[in-house]
Length: 330
Image (cartoon, rainbow, N blue to C red; front, side, top):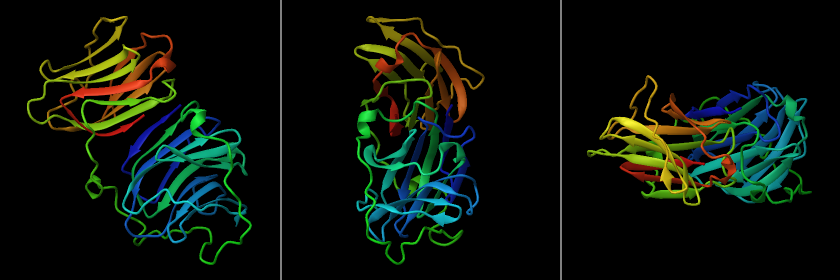
């Protein structure tokens, strides 16, 4: 079970884990650090109020040059765990991934393993995700069991729990509801992304599996575009070819296996041809048990039944044609 991305939410941000969390739940948080402000926090909480227990408090502190993790139980903070390394930079975008396992929270920042934090509160009590402090958010996504990085990207080893006492001013975080640390909703113009080069290709580490979501953000070409396409590939084969055609006013779906194209699919749901020259889009390709489900700008466009039996062999994303590409999340 996955929760589709929430785009450009205001901060402070809060959302519920409607089906709880379990071994394999993946939280993906994308945004940027504000130019002003000293701290922000990501909390996995046991409720939605400030007085509820916090199972995992992830707290980068620019005023100390470190990241603090902790747990709050029965209104009391436990022993802090520190990592004196700062992977975040003021004014710069970031992606945080929290992969929940039966033993710990595995955190990566910008696709690099950063730390592990062992559970102090049982997973079944975790109900809410919150983000507060001096960040803007571009998207928040929760993916169900089976999501995340392959294990090799989370090497063994724990975060150190140093013996030195907490320094004055490093008390557990409280963020006021107003002021400089409560920014307006994310404005892409604040942090203009560099457009990706076309043609574009990237690896899909770990392959595909049910609940895996690929997100592509961009815009159709503005000057008489003809076509662009998205391919999900393995070796020289194309498991899924998604091909908006402006010159035919349709979206063609197909596969290319054993060197031959299969039967084209062109039928569309009521939304019809949902791309237009120069207009921006967000495409979600959701891998489900029997098919790929494609949403465009939050609307369901089509399904494409799987034509290959082993989804995990699909290891490459390719994008080509008359398109401007701004962000890809795999």
